[in-house]
Image 1 (tube, rainbow, N blue to C red):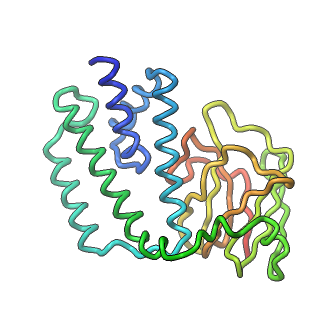
Image 2 (tube, helix red, strand yellow):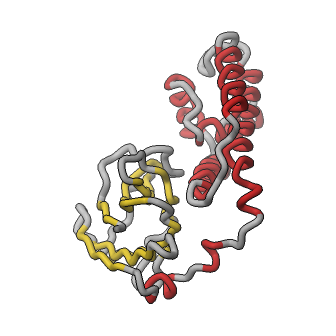
Image 3 (cartoon, one colour):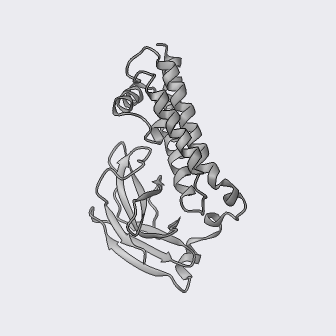
Length: 243
């Protein structure tokens, strides 16, 4: 396989990889290709993975309308039927068709997940952009919690139920290990964590990060593989109640 073909294949697979839509064998093969890729290709792959995951995460904190059940059922049936007729990615024969189908399926999943909420989203102002850290901190209903993290750092969270937002900052937070990132999670009461984004830089008290909290009861931080994860893969470094 030529270098251009390897590059195209890897970039196509960024979408299903970001959605955790690959089998274990496929995922290992993608990670092998990523290890062998040149740095610009690897960076483009990681950037796509991060963008997909952060786009989906951002849609969870607006009032998105779920996709109609018949659409989801039809998509899942199509995936099951197609998966039964193709070989795994690590087997060379039929590889290109497999890659292209997976990329198309992943793009369709993103379109449904994001598009289902796009009507309500486009009809609203950019709330996240309008709410500033200063507004959160000075809101009358805001509560501030300062919690020590497992790595010795401290996290300060100003949370406002009325604004459904939090201003988050860290003190003495060490950089993540090589190849890892810090990822923020929001945890509803009795629900599953969902991503609030990967931290490209660690927010400080001089430059807090504003996070839309929705109905979350806790905010947590974990160390994840570069590009972020769909669900936490490690114990949280810190978890802070938002109530």
